[in-house]
Amino acid sequence: MKLSVIGCGYLGAVHASAMAELGHEVVGIDVDQAKIEQLAAGRPPFFEPGLPEILTSAGASGRLRFSTDMADVAEATVHFVAVGTPQMRDSHAADMRYVDAAIDALIPFLKEGDLVVGKSTVPVGTAARLAQKLADSGSGATLAWNPEFLREGFAVKDTIEPDRLVYGVADERAASILDEVYATALGTGTPRIVTDYATAELVKVSANAFLATKISFINAMAEIAEVTGADVSQLADAIGHDARIGRRFLNAGVGFGGGCLPKDIRAFTARAEELGRGESVAFLKEVDAINLRRRQRVVDLAVEALGGSVYNKRIAVLGVTFKPDSDDVRDSPALDVAVQLKGLGARVVSTDPQGIENARIRHPQLDYAGTADEALAGADLVVLATEWKQFRELDPVRSATLVAGASVIDGRNVLDAAAWRAAGWTYRGMGRP
Ligand code: UGA
Image 1 (cartoon, rainbow, N blue to C red):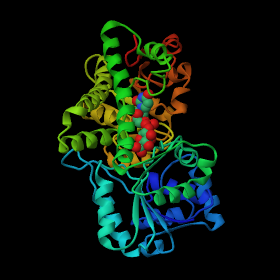
Image 2 (cartoon, protein in one colour; image 1 turned 135 degrees about the vertical axis):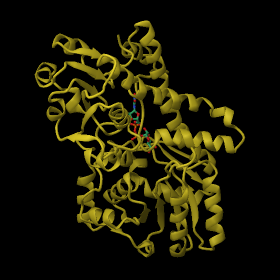
Image 3 (cartoon, rainbow, N blue to C red; image 1 turned 180 degrees about the vertical axis):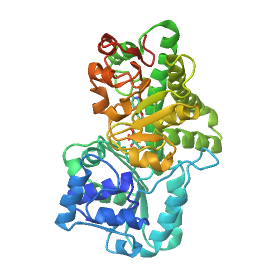
Image 4 (tube, rainbow, N blue to C red; image 1 turned 90 degrees about the horizontal axis):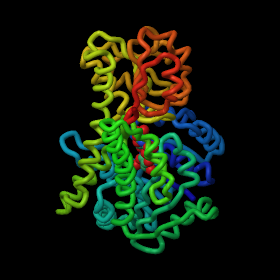
């Protein structure tokens, strides 16, 4: 099939490459010239495992092109809209300007029978509004809403082998076009839910709201564990054995960040309030508050570990990204902690395998080290804030020889507390004794 993908960020660049890898002919469009040049040269503008490989192979096949010119979508019959919906600067609502701009720019190039497929995460009601916009345009194109559930770090796998497909459609024809697009995944038995626009939009935001709630639930238990001497990691293992609860997404620590969970729960709350149902998701405000308190908890632990003040103390912060296997620093707990410690007068040195370049753009005032060894050198305190493999596997004995003070805060509860203590470290976890 001939497809276009509007917006080549974390979502769109992966979607375009994966669709070409599956045999479709794809053009990726973005307004950012530099990004398009990099993608066209086979170099992803961000770190995502597996993406360089499919970008290269799909590019070599001749099925994948990138352009800044919307006119290049003219041959495609299915157009995916994958632009961002960030949080508004002055409110919790989602900023819809990029979605609207993409649809407006697309309309002049749409033909009778084309299908526009929304993938961006949007407030419920958006699809109905955009479908009307398409109808009013007289282009003859129709709309489907097909939310995306990919995780950064696993984006290629999640796109090629999704765990479910959700189609929000107004007619059967749109569903059969999407079946053709996703023939490979459907052929392997991937479940497919065909529904209306509102349900499809809500599936996406409720999934992220549920995941955020699960994380804040366990972090709330960590807060209780902290005043009772209980161990939240063991608690998570124990309740996680109940198949109805499940162990995944029950890792207590510095909490969730990124370009999705935090802004999606806020946008959901804002939308529910607009709809007169604010009370239905009022708990998401608590989910957000618990999550932000965990960042403060790490800062408080740092102050405590350094005897009441971090002023002029050297602190190594391991991690700047919001999670491992990504270079994304949007709403990153690790960076937030580093910035807060710096604000209290600490000499913070942050390090990360992939995120330093992005972190430096946002926070040029922080000091960055290229390796964990450099960050640890002479540190009075070590804070593990993002659980990259290389940080999880740090040797406590060797690390102790690098620092000035053998004190560690395990902000992700991933270190072997006993091994670190045995190597002479003062170990502090999150909700662990
Ligand atoms: C999330 C969802 O997991 C995807 O399904 C969704 O498609 C995506 O948002 C999106 O809306 O685009 P992602 O933002 O890549 O994916 O990251 P997650 O793997 O969900 O992690 C989010 C945050 O939660 C990270 O900061 C992570 O460190 C934190 N987390 C995760 C915990 O603190 N504890 C856990 O047990 C799990």
